[in-house]
Image 1: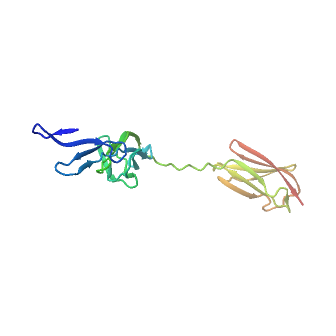
Image 2: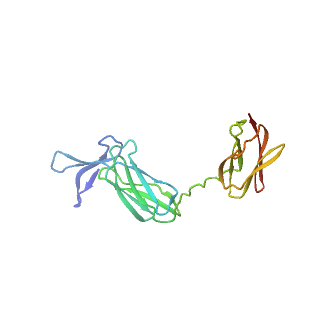
Image 3: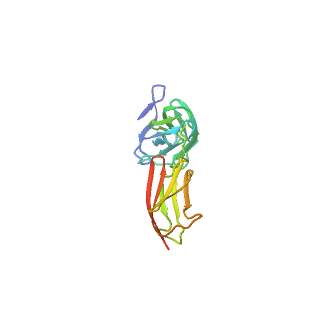
Length: 236
């Protein structure tokens, strides 16, 4: 290829060829009046991708944007310089490229679906590139609500040990509310009641103040409409 010299003649011989073997055209120009050639190597293309985390993210919550810059084969070189991050046309910030990646941490500034992109600035050897649009969902601030502990279940847990020995009988049970409850020890001779008890776990000595004689018993626990019955035995 011969370029014009601006005066109706031809200038130095100019040609395009792959000088460095990467398959891309480089510009070669014969230096006029010198036995040398000047070569301008073609820039190497790059590819960039963008990821935002977390997604969705709460408004004014920490957001991490990560740009990855790579050189597709058969290209060569290590991306350097910097990346600019955009929300639409609004610049969010700029970060340097290290090891093929650039990271920007910020507080998510706007509600709704945000269209994020990043732009890799060329470094004089590699072409710049723009990522595909990454959609980020920004919602009202996410507040973690601690789970409430489940109320204790209404349940008699039985006599421990069962059979009981020595005239002493300990009964264990759980009440879910502070509603009055009644515990009855029933045998062939009648029943003995224990007064109102509050919510929670209880252990009641049915032999308090007297000895429970040997025999078979029923323990009935009642609170409101709830009633449970368990068996117990007393040995000498």
